[in-house]
Length: 343
Image (cartoon, rainbow, N blue to C red; front, side, top):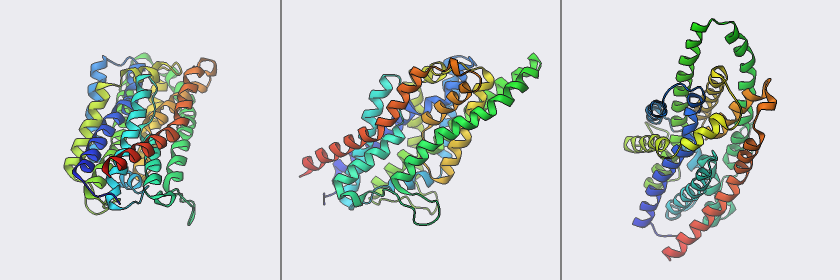
């Protein structure tokens, strides 16, 4: 067992904060994609709108997602901080590389892979909650999280596609002045996605910090469960991340997948917000990038299949597939380096 040191604490704090920042640059900008696609206003105004609502979402976040994330690994107290730090840094490194290429990879999915890889090296296969079906349809652990991450985009595409057809018909019957209501709806839906992203993504970094600083691989259910200074820090850093590195990703999601009008933008955002909110309430750590991207492709598939930019879609799909194994290897390698440095 590794002794708990100041370096371990610093590592988990820095890793958690950097994770929140990368969640902002990778996942959070997708809340702005619809506004950019609809040319609803200057980019700075869109960013300010997104930043404000992300902070709100982070402050209103519960603890269900945080408890799910930190509950994926069960290691000795002296090894918890290095595992959390290695997983966070592994996700950060991979996400940063993909973000630089303009690909909306999920730091959330990367964190799951990083936790699994570091957990196996720290305590063997039994140290990781892989998931099983003890009763009913509940599938906890890594398998349950990954199943949710895979199914959520599919549901997002189906829901958005189903909503697109009647909404387009309704929009064609509206008089031109009434289209302003659609524009207002896009702004409100983007705010909903930002709040949903703050409640879901924000909890992941919060959970890492809360568990690492307490030395217990669980987030308390009683009370707020997470200290307010941790909430404020993670919510603010997440929101700042949307400003410092998200523009290229916003352009990819807004205009690099499928052509969309204001109605399609509205439908995709409404479907995405609903699914991400449901994940936050149910304790399922979803990825905003995968859900919003799939919802936009879903609207493009309905009546406009030839206009879907399949090359861009396939690049993103390949990136999603390799995220877990890549971050798992990074998490395992970084933990081993950390352990060797501490001996």
